[in-house]
Length: 288
Image 1 (cartoon, rainbow, N blue to C red):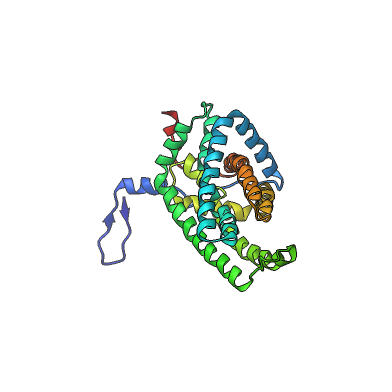
Image 2 (cartoon, rainbow, N blue to C red):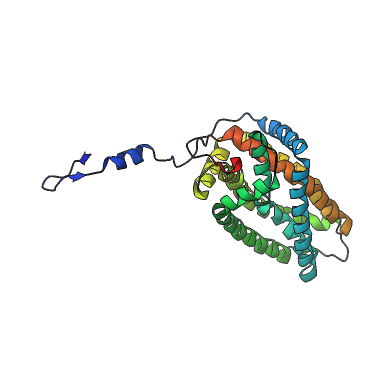
């Protein structure tokens, strides 16, 4: 193949393989379909089917998250206090998508007609370890910034714990929720479809994140419903945390052990219903 050159300069012969590579180059972002406003409700229905098909594997993942949360909560209370615990649990929303990676693999195995296996989940996570760690690093930075923001809210809008009352919490929770929602929206847009895509296809983390953000922006009504359903799934447990005692936190953890796997399964079906990632090679490690 020969390219035209300006007058007085020699023409450059390009290898034919370069033209083939350009023709077969992967797109910058995976295309997405337009979703109906209430389609996310159907994702939860499919998630429940996956949960029933693999209850042991799903609950095992939920139990691991609960145990990890207990350890982190003990550290927060032991070396901090109640508001550090509240900030930690609130920030949990930011890292939950990464913790649910195993449930994406369980749903994928069910979709392929395989017997769900935790061993395959670990194989999948190991294969995508590099891309997942890049994503984890970004989430860690966001979480740390959120932690500092939560500390600032506590400093500038303190609550008198000697006479706790709902009115004492209103300003603190209002400002804290407003600040936290900014971080939550950013993470939600980036993680809504990217992590399932990394598990399903041989794609890099940047492409997956850009694909996720593009799909969220093109389907705002449906994604608003999906975000609301996620909040409804975890809000009762977080509300119990405001009781400020061990019973409330224990109920939070128990609910998360069930709701997190369900949300993880639903996220997989959300990805499959929304993103067309057929241009990228499919992960074949599950068939081994």
